[in-house]
Amino acid sequence: MKYADRTGRIHGNDTLQDRFLRLLYGSLPGRLLLKPLIHPCVSRIGGYVLDSSLSSILIRPFMRSCGISLRDCEIPATGCFRSFNAFFTRSLKEGARSFDMDPDVLCSPCDGLVSAYPISRTRHFFIKHTDYTLDQLLKDHKLASRYTGGTALVFRLTVSDYHRYAYIDDGKRSSYRRIPGILNTVNPSAAASRPIYKENTREYTLIKSQNFGTVLMMEVGAMMVGRIMNHHKAYTRLDVFRGQEKGYFAFGGSTVILLFEPGAVRIDRDILRNTALDIETGVRMGEPVGRRA
Image 1 (cartoon, rainbow, N blue to C red):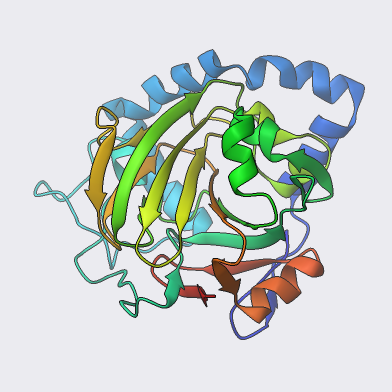
Image 2: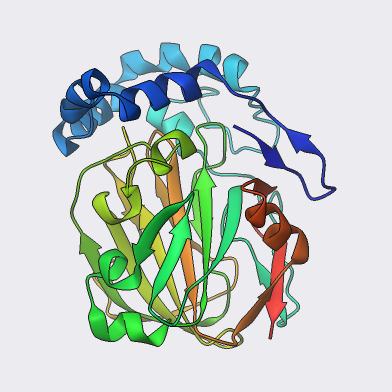
């Protein structure tokens, strides 16, 4: 898996995990083995295990293998996390992720690897060479028409990323919806061969933002991520603020998708260039990724 940082330097390579997932998704024996793994029940069972106190023994090996530092994290009063999921969904210290407060600046809602895709006038867009339509993604033809000709930003969170996400602007949140589904991995090895974003469990809300029009923000579950923990699900309308936490994912890789109406934003050139080269761009929560058009 390769990605670019904001200086243009390319990082990463083809890992054993990438090769294994290509075999799993690209061969008949692999797909037969895959079928039970992507069922939500498997993720729920995994979640129970990772919520248990016994799972805390996995924390230090995981940190070493992924190069994770707790320097910017809130540490429990006891000095240790009660479970692996408590560690995985850890909060950061105040100021560890600051949002650019210039109203013209579009900030990343999370840490992760971002790609930018134009949405055609026929409501089609391509993610890792896989054709999607807004109707498939949203299950709402009328809502899909609002974003025809607009822009889709896809933020893929890896297991080593900070797994909380935030609102990108001040505004009013409304219209929460959950679409149940299976739980494929969101690794590019799977995305290149399977329409994972129209198959996976996902949730979305509309945000009538002050500076970027009506933004659709979607969270997509992934293998071993049966829980998308959005706050305030019970409210239909809610005032929200730039940088305010919207929710978090439990263990695993996962994805945040932002949809913008036509003419609402201009995405930074390096992200557009990298996406055209099939390379993701590493960003952190609050970092600029574009501007108001």
